[in-house]
Length: 104
Image (cartoon, rainbow, N blue to C red; front, side, top):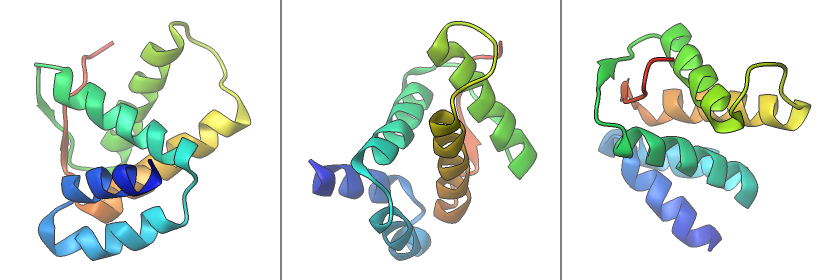
C-alpha cells in the first residue's frame, strides 16, 4: 500500500519536481500520506476551482479542508496540525499551484 500511495502522490507533482516529491514522501508515514491523498482526492472531486498561488492561500485551503473533514470548528489535535503542516510542505515541494476546494 505504501508504494501505491507514493506512486500516486508523486504522479500529482509537476514532472520536474517528481524526484523531489518522492524524497519528501519517503520520510512520511502511511497515515500522513493518506491524509495528503484525502486532500487531493477532495480537490479532484470538488467541481469549483479557484486559484491558490501563495503559501498563505494554500494554508487557508488546508484549514478549510480540515474544518470540513471534522464537521465542526474548533481546535484540532496535535497530530492533525502536524499532518496539515506536512500537507502544506508537500503541496509546495510538488509544485501544485491550484487546488479545488469549496469555500466555507
